[in-house]
Amino acid sequence: IIMSYLAAYGTLRGKWNRPNHFIRKGYLEGYGMYTAGPYPVIFKEEHSRVVVDVFEVLSATLKNLDKYEAILGNAFDLYERKIVAVDKNTPVPYLAYAYIGTEAFRKRKLASIPSGDWHQHIKETKNIIL
Image (cartoon, rainbow, N blue to C red; front, side):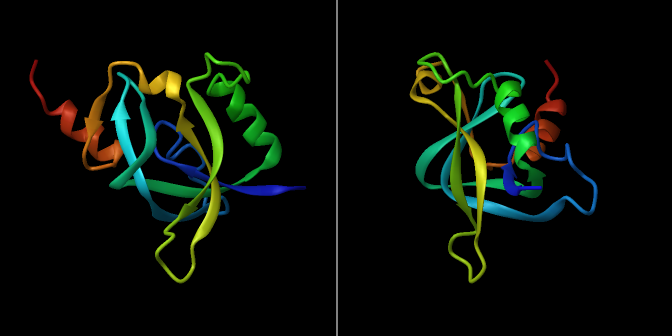
């Protein structure tokens, strides 16, 4: 059984909330978060950080998540799975996979989430009266 780490920042956060899979909460330094409606996307961005939950997952799970994120390996992909350093400025950083937005995604109309925390963003926007 091959295990990998996953840095989940949006709709995938909390999906594997079983104690044996959750490793820790952390931060991706140098990434900014944006909303594309009902889901977030992150891009490399200086002076920003994103809140993540790090999970230990099966490598087969990553392949299923690639399908969930509609990664087909073509120019229309909105996400790509990359290795990132979680808490890279600490004595014990984790190398984990994360789904990063592609240049095709960056061209869409997106709204910034300055907090870098999807869960906080959802709580705040639910309190807005339309």
